[in-house]
Image (tube, rainbow, N blue to C red; front, side, top):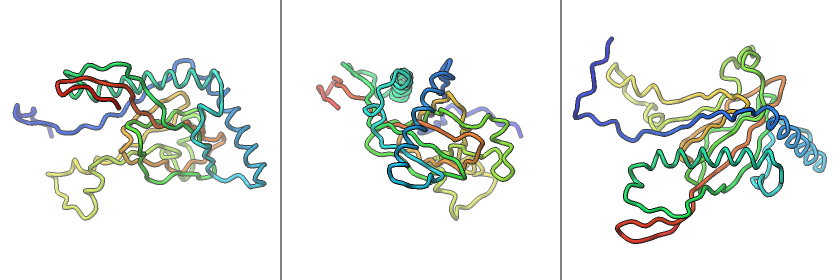
Length: 235
């Protein structure tokens, strides 16, 4: 069925921005980070005399704990992307404002290592405006999706859009089929950065692979001061 053109008096309200960007020449950086993270995990588990589980999450002080060029380079790339996305999302809101000394601040950063059907349930992030994940390591695409039970959903990042909560018990006919488009699955890929609004619910589906699924997650916000018609204020 062909869709008619949008009427001139129709508005599409409240879009949700999501950015997917690949870090160029990421192989060496990823290999360095993977070695560092695995060694840290193994040391922490040995201290506790514990058995490794399907999910390991580090403390969220990654940038203070590890003074590595690979991390500095990664977060320079992340900072540029966060600012670009925030500027695009706030284009209308920032009109007429004079901003000074705006900068991206990382409120927390941590890594996770998953395997053996490790997953992370639905959640969102507070105390920040943007969140993201950068993939360091996982199985190659053809290996990952060939898993006999998990298939293409093996280790994917699933976003739940604002329409999702309308599905439970909702009336359905051909007039509101658009509500069924309520989730988005993003496949893990080494070198891929995914940025999204911190309020957006998301989860990591179970992962099993020949290689661990290693990812860096972070929360970010913009700091600085702006001046508008009503005077100046800081944040």
